[in-house]
Length: 265
Image 1 (tube, one colour):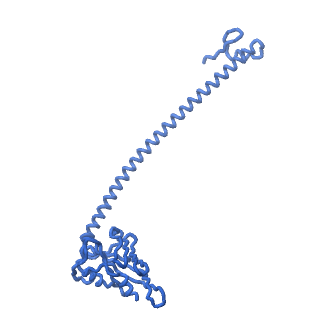
Image 2: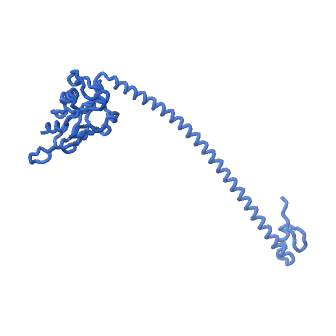
Image 3: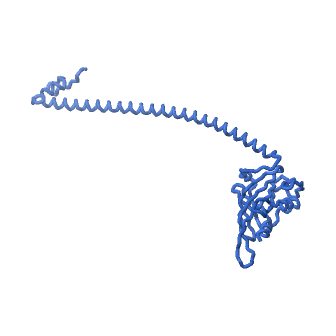
């Protein structure tokens, strides 16, 4: 490699740095030596800066390339995962839909009374029902019947839900009935087991499914309706005849609390 030369201010000739360094203590060459050393140091510094800049550019370029490759790999992996997940979800949804359709078809075409475990599916029937003296709030989502009226608010909890072939529902439930007999002993409560006979809108009850006797539903089928029956043996058997009679005589808006109150006393 050719050595760099520096011009002498005294002789105007060029010499290498080694030449000046050998004469650094000679007064005639001292000034030229110092000037050559400054130029040489400046040259070395500039060279180092250029080298560092090139190294930095190379590192940044390499890093960007690695990041790009990694991002491309992750994107490809994510797309593949999403496609696989979408395919699996589609299969699952299709399977669930088939099962749901089959269950719905089975329920719609049921030829005998069946027990419904997931009664939350009937949440569309939830709402407030009642007469001028009381209101019954039926909630299939929580499995509760709440009654309000002249007496204290009462809450009953679903125990069993059954579906009959005519699409009517029987909901057995229990709850503590609070009442006041006005005998000076204050408020009392009694465990009551009751059963709700429920007919959805546009559906008629065709028979008493406890006795098998046919009946003529005289209620307004444009709305949901229900009546209440009670059990005298702790919920083992419910006396459903009064509830079915209420549908025959169009009295599904009767005073339910009064019936329960009379039984509690």
